[in-house]
Length: 282
Ligand code: AMP
Image (tube, rainbow, N blue to C red; front, top):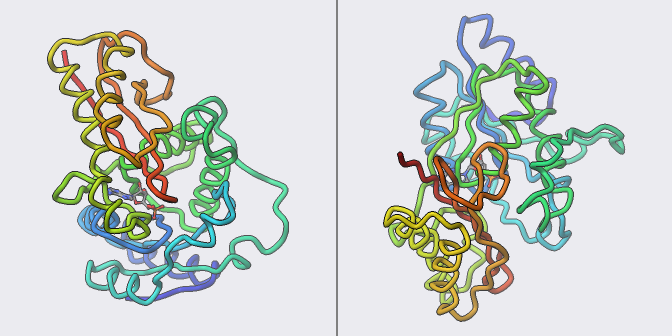
């Protein structure tokens, strides 16, 4: 496996792979890799001839400087992780390489970027869409892999790719969970042992909302209340939102008629958790 630190090297390696007739699979990450990232890498390995993972903690997508500072970084173990999974190349640029000067250009996917996560993390999705657009320009991949764990991010990227005619297929990958249901996340390592034990309550609230839907409930307010009642019994877990949304636009749904996502965010100690469930029924 090859570790690359510069944009020029990344372009060269991808061009050489293309010349060999290989399809390119891209897995953008911020590192501190876990089995969730592993699932994306496995898919890329299985579906393309050349899998490239990027590791870059993108300052532009952090709305709070302390979150950027405290974000876990573990490049050496991440490289070993990618190697074990059979990734061909890791591209891990530093901030100066990705942002050599003060940028005046950004990509904004309007509407969807200002709801829910966007409302609680102003500028977050502009930072995400911009860095992913930059990565697509550096690494012209055939397929790019994104986790459903970050469902709103996935929707933002899908809309950006459609609107800008980026010639890449976005592949959504289901959320990988711990045995107790907690969605895997690099931020989980910042939970205290006590908080880690109660963290699955967020997932349980989503499951409760899903259970109500499967049981015939159709009013979002009622379903939301059922999910929130469950977390209300968990001291320490402060829910920012729990909502039912259209999976593509992230508009709130009031009455359930078809597919939807139940999405939630909560604070636990100083750590912010997000999770969601896709629900489809006839
Ligand atoms: P991050 O390093 O957190 O920016 O995540 C990089 C990619 O991995 C994103 O597309 C995430 O949605 C995805 N990802 C993170 N956690 C999980 C998980 N538990 N299951 C599936 N994909 C995940």
